[in-house]
Length: 327
Ligand SMILES: [Fe+2]
Image (cartoon, rainbow, N blue to C red):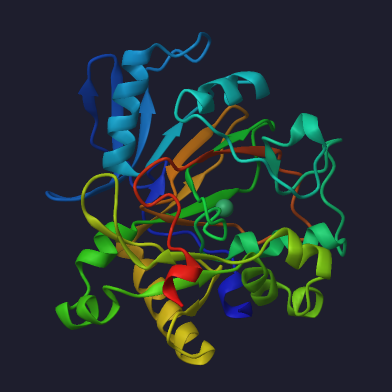
């Protein structure tokens, strides 16, 4: 996958580099959509939330409606700390995902992909470093869990970043709607095996070509439908670098189709790049109707302290497909 690991920034960025920007006022909130057309919108920067206090229920309802429409919401300089980050996350769903890897109890609801708990950069050549490389491949979080997640909320605790630090997002709903009818018919009922160790292997074959027995035992694969209905009611593709095999197809044929679809979804007309500017910047996305990727991890990057909370899905597709039911 080395070709896929270079740094790239899409034409559409947040903040906008061209200056062209639409602003929509909705009560106390201001919304700057990132990709928009008459019938489809994806990504928005939102202003007007008072993050210094618990978020009132009517604002949470309004934000969820925006989330359903845009799939990725970006908030600048929120000033949130760990506890406020977790408290807001709990307003969006009953259960937060517990990360089984690398963390003690105190930190198990916040995932820090680039930093150790003391704030230093994860050591190059450590197993954890190789584990993090897969985040630079297009994916959706937690598709390898049988109970998947709906939202991820990533909050920066760092100082202003120099030199550009980016996260990239792609709209899997719009991408699905543009597929040919023949392709839609071909993929309608497919079920995909998602395996964390598959994406780790793609990004770091020398280390994760053969995951350790305790790693395999900690994370067996999960099964989800490829074509799903998104929270906004449109059809979407549920895809990720974790997608290993399509049931009923061999591995080579599966990988060809999976990466054909990932490449389709991540064309520049469906994607944008979000720039991390300041501590407190926060992005909240819906894993059920988008994909994302981190910038590739390099030896020269500065420690980027971004922490993620992940909210379990409680919707109709949350538990995927039972493997035994398919045999
Ligand atoms: Fe991710």
